[in-house]
Image (tube, rainbow, N blue to C red; front, side, top):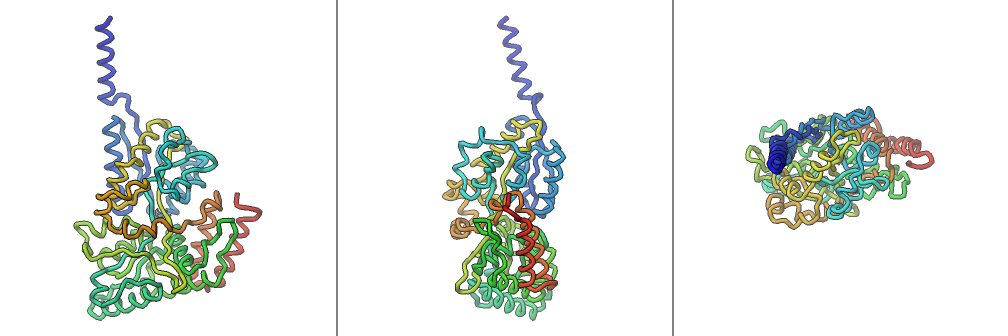
Length: 421
Ligand code: GLC
């Protein structure tokens, strides 16, 4: 009897160690720069630990295309993807398809940055766990500012002037493809984040205010958009109208621009061993809209969620808890400069050493400007689509700023009708 029990136990142990009980999960993580590789390392570590297998499903780089793909898969009730990487502005839109993770994650959610933790709850459910935080930043070439004896620009007017001067100077030295400023101008969510920064920096509000009022039609917002339209074809290549994060990083990292607007992930790549601009780059807050304006970086970031249609919800939840945990967030911050969402990691010396800007720019991260996703709820994607399309028209000179904002105001009020929900 005892012998057969012992052999049963032995057999069970064998089963665990050979992974015969293992499940196969799939996770969608994005693949900007070395994001895929860094995600894979984390996922593989969990798989090895637990004896499960995990497949990574790669997704489009554009946040807008990615959301459309997720909506399509989830609306069909597809269980093909167990774990989703979800944009901080999309938890409301996707909540109905996501599992309530309260029982596993409720206890630790208070450890995360409040702005990220807030979006993880929708209608009393904890639908996602924060993974990393983003804020829009100004990348600059310190070597070129030194060469032309210019300070880091404080206002957009300074940036425009310095970009023009350095672009002219570099072109005179035979660098015909050198540009002043690159950013994200394609008609997609990334443009909404850039344009919100311009508008907010001029004190032109956040499209829709906290009470749900549409505020975008105002002279400050028009001024901000006019300024940006003036960059296209002068200090910024026309091609920016089709740039996402990676296209702008491509130009900047090849050494062909003095300024770039991007998220923190670009730091680890710019400082990578194979980077032509390694050691020549600095990061600052994005410029103010004039002396009365303020520095504004849009809050971005990503969370991990489990699909309601997952056939292996327990294992999927365990994977989410592992990837969003302290050790993984630290590894990702050190190797890929993904800003942690766990507050205590902001005093970690390894993270600070790898990413000096995190400590220097505490204000940018704590005062990051949120898009109006909470107040517009399910309608956020529509609001943002109207916004980036209107901005894209102004940038491509198909509409005047005031006229585009007037139409946008009307369209947003139509979406709102009697309220946002
Ligand atoms: C980054 C941010 C996300 C934002 C997107 C726009 O992925 O984390 O919040 O919506 O960029 O391109």
